Length: 254
Image (cartoon, rainbow, N blue to C red):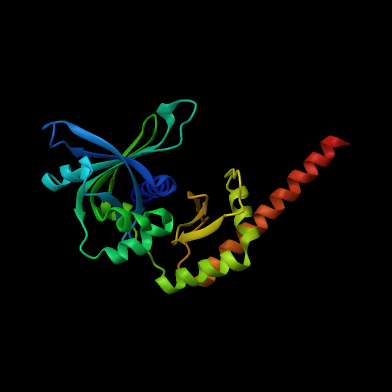
């Protein structure tokens, strides 16, 4: 039973890592008693909880100032039957952070354009969603509550390890990044700007034209040696897949 709980939490976490945007529901101040939904982008803090960067002028920020109880709903990419799409609802309290520098160091990796928000408008601030519980629906009959303890995982890599590995991949292994996307079934309209922006023990994020692509690893990696091994294995698998596809095309052409 405990294994099922951990696996369910992993599925919920992967969906949340893939999207990085969702509907934030707050308690309306303008219309008391009514929930108010807003689209927000988010990232994961190093403790596994969720970060958002929102304007003090926004309605949802004003709502949170009065009542910090919120939910964040994330929906999987639409399928043929929308009822079969996975979705996650995170329940918790949304509070402004005093130390925004640490939050910015993570958040701006995924949303580099947000670096200009504070300089241009001076009204954006980081908030953390302190998770209470998570609701995960994987499809018909696949409905579960997930505890905070199972959902939140702490980043095991240090900043200098992350920065060094990312620099190495972006400077020396650009070709491999496109292979990772191909192996994961991610379509790229233009991959010239593709670069790695972040990773944790469960997967990595690549970015192209400000679009983030999450690619999970086959297993957890807890040090740089394991990271190198899993990335090398992914490159090899992608090249083998390409070679196999080319062979199949040649056989059809004969």
